[in-house]
Length: 251
Image (tube, rainbow, N blue to C red; front, side, top):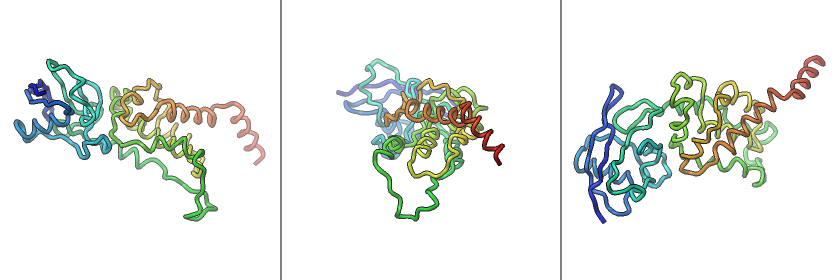
């Protein structure tokens, strides 16, 4: 089955732009990225779009489709009606480079700030041993493909640009949680870092990040809330506070 689909695609750069209307052929079984490629091939060869694997594993083709952050390669045309007008825009949280391509360097800056895994000092490379039951809790977070849809939908930075300096966002909260839950990570200040450097306290756990994750990572319940609990246990538990006061007096 083939029909003419109606699309509105954002065209422009960091100086501004607009939505442009296109009519593009749609074939059975196609995804939105297929249509964008056909649009490039037949009508507007200068349309800028970022993509790589077209299999939902590289995270490159993130965009907003009818206002919802999605991977274009995983959004099937069959979920829309033939008469629908489909709007494709760049991720709103990040600066536009051109058309559907955004500057996501903010995320790499936040990644560089996270202290690396630190093995126990008494173990040599090759001596690391851990049970699957111990590592299983954090293994889920390694499924992340860094599409940054969770970052895009997070209203803490989506609606408040000035929060970016102090806020790492959901993708890096799961990285912090992965390291904090790792049975061999020797750093004991992950919770402090999450509070002071990543701004985990700004997250009000709306779960919008979990809802858009294409890898179905339970970001909020399995990563962010446990990290918040670790922050509370470490810094706000009255018994811990009292113990720290006693130890300081002893020294």
